[in-house]
Length: 488
Image (cartoon, one colour):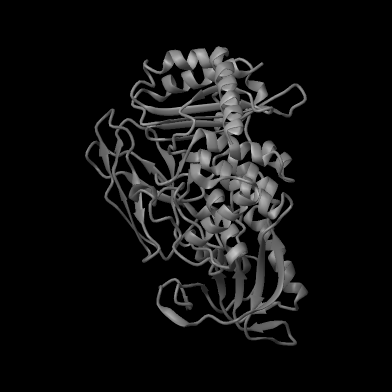
């Protein structure tokens, strides 16, 4: 034992000595007592593939990772499901298909966790193309008209849409909508806003998608010049009501604001119902979803009968998980990340509440050989301020992912400076870097890899900063300088 401890101590001293002599470490040591990081909580670990430490400060200190947590969620999802995995959305029916092609019953859209339905990104089918596929499935099943309702079923994932620790004002934003097993347009809604006269109401118009069941009220007013934009939509899935609050400065130009839609399954059913009618299909019923008690409810939100046990007639599939993960990391998409966490929970435990999802993810992390002591996780996207990770643990995780069969897809999902959320990031040697950013009030983080000349990871790093009060561009400049010094 004494010999082992002596060897370990000697190895640590060599590593620290090597780090102390690198340009990056010297620069870090000079920044500890200076602005913009003076008084902040921050830490870094940068380590070569052979274990040599190139830079280290507070590597064991747990901090809020913000969207750096998406690395953990997307990486474990790829490892658990495989890069080629696709999520299924099924069409099913209750009642009877008559010989003349009439469905005397309800048509169900049964969600299986595809987060891309109705999304406006590079990998998702446009709604019209997806609906064409669904109508083709109906025709193959012998259905030509529907004497019943179109029912959106997102009940495969139990529990609340959002994590309980998310900030109240985040819940109504496009980046905090929560998710269920059947969604539409990433459960977002677009409102066009423009200033009125100072002190007058803000002009508001709903653009997309339509949600005829919602009752919107605006208490937003036009603020004095220079007061900015503090518009928030306050909404919930408990009732179809929403209030727009805050102010919009008088000199600001009209813009489209993106907010949360808590009724993704109902929106999906409504848009397919509308498409069927617009393309000549006879549908005598309306549209509905299923509430938490298992009852059908329509646009009036009055519970009807219990949902049936529909018979499947076919399914469509999402883009590959590799494509979804790339979108999630490139655009730092909270909705995609939360959907992947919920899918892992449902697959592993058949329960998609957050506690079960985190149990499922931790099992994947342990299977990768990781000690969970450096991680405290609340959600999948990093929107919660109850998640904590240390730079050292993040580096261990990123190194462990290199042994995953899905690592190539994981690496390909990480933006290079100039791409995605890093589109404005520039520094010397940036083309050798693949990393994920993470930011929220007082938080800025970068974690990822520095590649060798063959495009393989040569250095793994994690740089986390919390409780910063200096302007973010100043904090970013220090972090990017360290990264440039780490590049061989």
